[in-house]
Length: 194
Picture 1 (cartoon, one colour):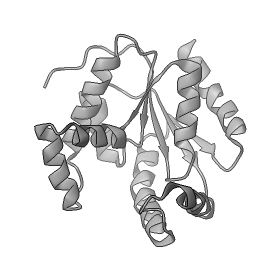
Picture 2 (picture 1 turned 30 degrees about the vertical axis):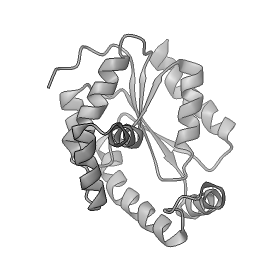
Picture 3 (picture 1 turned 45 degrees about the vertical axis):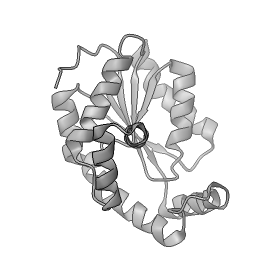
């Protein structure tokens, strides 16, 4: 595995439960700051779609309902970061780390994280948003029972990540309007890019 070249731009982890609006905020950050948005889920899906040997292995793992090994996700992130390094002004890593150990491994094998943005919303708000999304998305995992399971899994692991990175963590109230939330986000990002 090739080492990652030195990274001189900010690395930001973006955390938040399903329905917290982190995807929307990532889009706004990309538009304003020119950061590269990397979603571990998107990278996994792209690898599966590519039909590569690794993609075929991932398909088999996912079909069994097993978790993808941490090393595979790290490799995909490392490759994506290395490929974008020449042109990127910063990296938004969305939906990663899912648990404390993933964060530790990322910092050991790729680079230290500069900032952790946590979009925080109550369970009621998240369930309501996801049920609203389900009406239009047709996603099979957007029914109330599945939503509550997903939130439970997220909360269990996210608490460990939040405790591990308290110094770099910025907890953002995600119950407000998109613009109000983004106004707060910019107060954390502006100093990183100046």
